[in-house]
Image (tube, rainbow, N blue to C red; front, side, top):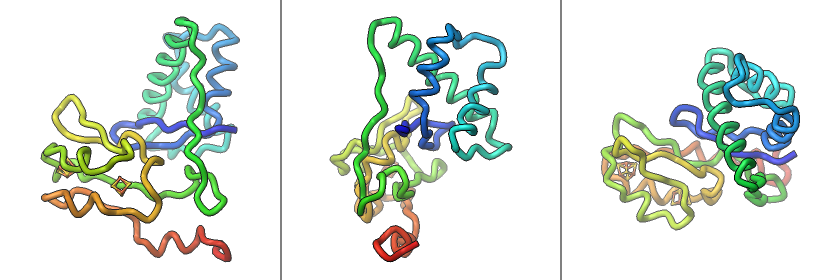
Length: 171
Ligand code: SF4
Ligand code: SF4
């Protein structure tokens, strides 16, 4: 089952089995405007072993509907979107390693230094003149260099010790 990364609000989330779920809905003729589809998408995502916290349900429903709308538009144009393969890290799917930058929105001034610095396309500018983490799983596990080029220190990473659990012999 493939993963696909989506933005929930401003935060990235990896959803397992999203393309399979969308394929099924599309084959059933479901339209993004169908009443209650957002909630249904949340439930279906849960059935595919995705963790969606109850307080964030509305945000996830909105994000999943937005993704399904894009998916339907692409299918109608004759394209068939595929899940992205982010590769592996020490034998584990990259999406299983929660290593990527987190931006403090209140500190970011949109200078763009991180976008210029990172050659892996992790960041993207937003319409409101700030920056968001668009492709968290493109971030190289263990790298935290962009935090040093951010003048207001808006970029943070998990503690490096967290990676020990994902090394051979870890949990
Ligand atoms: S370098 Fe820092 S302040 Fe500048 S856009 Fe990136 S996150 Fe925002
Ligand atoms: S840590 Fe490295 S790879 Fe990850 S976003 Fe920053 S510069 Fe890019």
